[in-house]
Length: 93
Image (cartoon, rainbow, N blue to C red; front, side):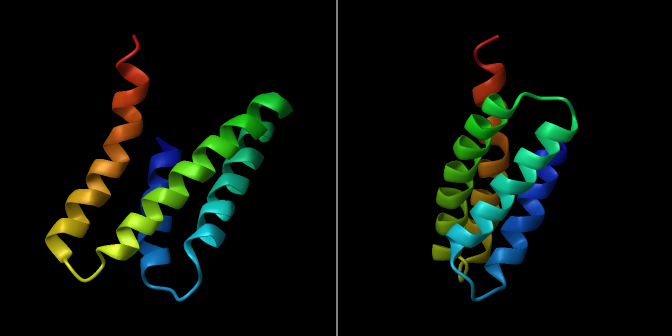
């Protein structure tokens, strides 16, 4: 859940900045890597998870930035992008 809140905050913040989306995605991945290691996760698993989350965030942020001028569509994509990882995780159970 903290990852989704962080993703939501960074999605809003990157949409209001002039920096490229890959910088925000890299920051998101780095924060997740640090939090994984602090909470006792392994280094290899943390790096693999950070790479996957970083690539997801990069695409997510790029799509949000592309539709930033259409507020209703931006909100639907924002919520959909937050719900998609939850569905992907719990669909396998």
